[in-house]
Length: 108
Image 1 (cartoon, rainbow, N blue to C red):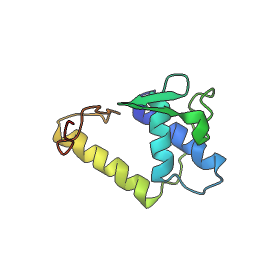
Image 2: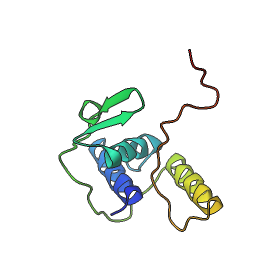
Image 3: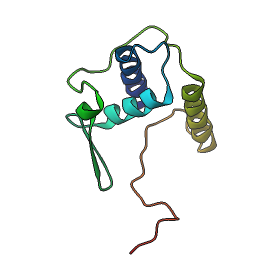
């Protein structure tokens, strides 16, 4: 299972836990973080995010599921990722997180 598949599976679990009828952008973000976490902890630059504090059960692996209903916002996230992958010439989408500062960030 790749990062995108794992993130989607975790997002589905998060939506079910919250008793939501569809997967939204918040669940996709949480699922993506869970897919790249180590023992329920994600390091993003200077930030350390404890997924358990956000309600994620990091002890459970991603589950295969039937076709979920995705919210319009979640579909937009997937569409944007697919466009970026096509523009880069990729055949698949991948979960990449850049820890480089944005061009607008200035050093002190």
